[in-house]
Length: 84
Image (cartoon, rainbow, N blue to C red; front, side, top):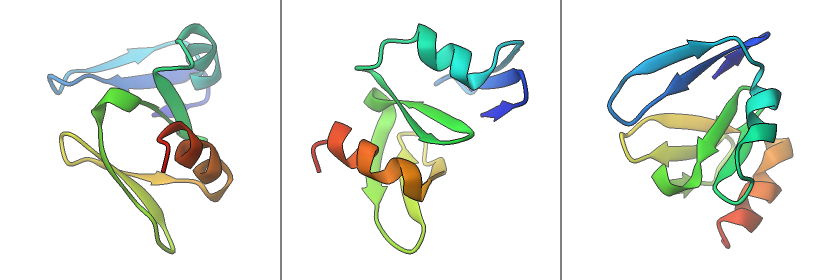
């Protein structure tokens, strides 16, 4: 999750790290094959997606039951990456 030039990184062990880089900077560092930008504020690791729920509001459900909104702009890219 991002806010300005700081980004919160949520780990699978429930640890949360705050770093002083923008989400765009992090997106450029990470391999594109393993991560997908699903919203202006969210970049997810594809290995931890449990399901994608299409609807008026598109949602990703992560392995830890966290629900993240997928923006309308990013939905088609996510569907392509997930081969849906």
